[in-house]
Amino acid sequence: MKEYLIKSKNDNESSLKPQYPVCKIFQEDEKKQEKEKEEKKKKKKKKKRKKKKKKKKKKKKKKKKKKKKKKKKKKKKRSYMNVGRAVLDRTTTINTVTTTSTIVGKANSGADLRRIAGGRRKRTTENGLEQRWEDEQDEEMVEKEEEEATVEEAERTTK
Image (cartoon, rainbow, N blue to C red; front, side, top):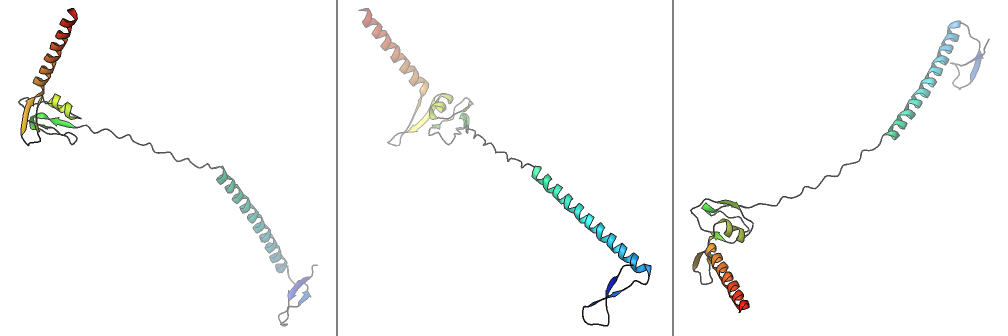
């Protein structure tokens, strides 16, 4: 038989006295307690193993790369002009006079405006007077002068 050490209730001191078991219930309780302890130890070991596996999985995960945002190209502002109502864009400095034809065109500069408007425009001179003329007539005059000059040069070369 095994010898069991049990604390004595009478003594205040923590001395242990040997006693022999009287019944089988006491022995069975001890066996159950030992089994429970072993099971707890096994569970603890299993839990530790699971935790290690989870850590490994975390290491395998790769971080996703952030995609760079593409810069959008700015579109050039197009200015539209309704010549019949003399609506101009902000960039132009020429005021158009209302014409009989209803031409709608795109204009980016004053020269384009003059061409689209059919030549009619007005400017203020230094004196403050308004002068109106048609570009088409001016262009025709320039062309005639150029033709005359070429004809004169041709005559000189023939002489």
